[in-house]
Image (cartoon, rainbow, N blue to C red; front, side):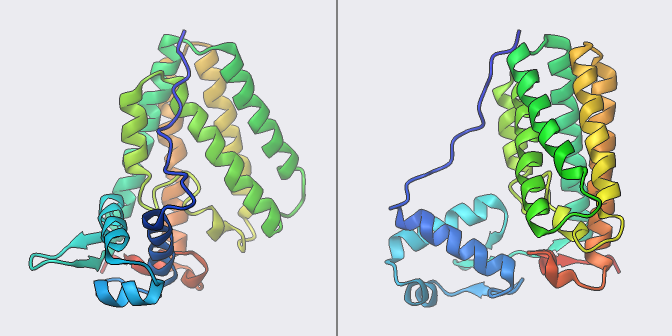
Length: 253
């Protein structure tokens, strides 16, 4: 049976100036305060955030590793932009890796306690979806529970290699399991799409518990297609500004 392998812990040091700078810079990028393509002036950021150059440099390096910044040939960084294809490929890759995780979980077996925790998570989602319409608070709760379920799914494979690869692919703000859920909040089909996603969650758990590896993998590959649909709606919809970071995505010509 697979042992639980938690995702790599993040730096939780609230006193870390580098971490605080990283969070603030990420927020500035995703909000459009630092537009896509713009060069990051290190001294200007130092003055703006009121911290020294050392933690700013560390924060910039971490954001480059996340994929939000790119290093310039002559030094310094610029805010990255992403083609729609870049984001679609990242979502496709997530579906592939999560599909592999689901197949390995089914083939290797998963501890009953982990399956029970995942089912309890989905039961909380069921309670949310009993509402005829979802408000902002319900969507926030859904995002939290959806992330928790996908984290548990990664643990089920019992593979630190897969955990690391999933962490890498979801580091872009658009490729995470809930990356485009916010876009659905103002759609009349919002609840219906989440019901479909919830059904796929239950199906993959059934397949894993039933040791049906190929079926579990196929379900998670199909599951990522919902995110692809949400990507198209986010980029081409009438209110892209409602989705943090969408302005960094370049539409296909």
